[in-house]
Image (tube, rainbow, N blue to C red; front, side):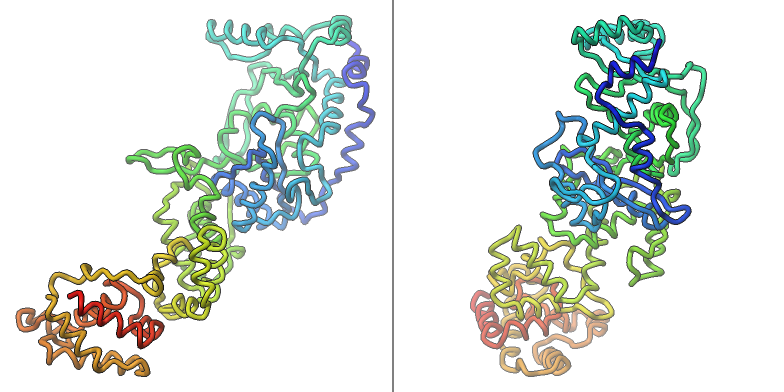
Length: 548
């Protein structure tokens, strides 16, 4: 076989060489040991939390080594593509702290020296490498129809042998140049296949940076490199792109482990250096006591957009993803309470081999811890931004008096033990509701407090309450009410002799709290009453007494 003639027959328009692209896409000028990683989704417009997690791991791997991270769009499967599916992916990454400085940066926009970063725009690269493989005798055209390929698979299935196009089943492998020329000139469609050097006896051994040492049978299948329309398969495109974009570490889901023998064989056949691999176990969820993958179909929290809609701050989402990423993160955070996440020494080898368990309850706890230490301006700004998009009426309500909104959100904040009531911005409307559209519900009053005693407390408290009192004076006036009304200002005294009193100071303050908020658990009551003001406080006391 004259491979030069065959290469010219199949690729008459390819006039560049692999050496040309080696020169065009030179090795990156990075420090020794720097890692180059990528996130390479399909443009479906949907970003799974697992995708965000994978992108984060890739970026952290690059960042901790002083390397480079880029976004590549793998759009060779046009059936899955949606119109402008890129923008949703880029937005999803950026919304949660993964800024794209290299690669695809938006719809039809890119940045960086190794582009195009969209596979459909890189046909010349793939065809050049494919031509080189034909010249080397490592690739050949296959004219088998889909029906013929299926018939081969059916035969293999009946025999119980490895399925695929290889060995005696590779009918086009040994076609002569004349046979190929005739078919090509006749316009018969064909794919380009790798002439696998695998014998079936060799093994592939590689050190996965998460899973450890893995040994697998070598690939013997003549995999498709280019489809009939000249578009590359994922396997071939990934090989060419990772080489010419100078990727050093391929980080992806562990569903791709079975493809590693094929990918390593492709790199070696092309004369390219094989990158390091790190395969991430899927994010799991407990369902009726059983672990399963977080599902796009079953779980709303699987979509990154869910976190925007619910109003989780990006800082909270990232903080939680770090707990899934490395087993030692939570210990690090306890020892470094105020440290920026970028200071965490992320390590691929400390990732879960079997899959991290996603827990929305824990996600909420993490988010509460993040939000509770932020100042009121930070909380208000982000609440307004969320409400402007997802709750217009609430946005108008807060915007009408931002000073009041800030004062409400500042209650029990910026102290040694801040309250942890807010996990996401969608919690805020209910959290502040009693300051605005107040609907009294006195049924929450504990059953241990009868209506007559509640009325008596409110009647006497209204006489002495003064908005200008400092907090100590305000509380002392409540305590002074206790003994004349049959309560004790001393909780310990009540617990020692409960039958001697109607209740204690906590019950007195609960009566007033319920009058103000229709809740038994709220932030600081003194601050609440200051914000409500004299007229509103008196109205609420009167309303509760009338209802009782």
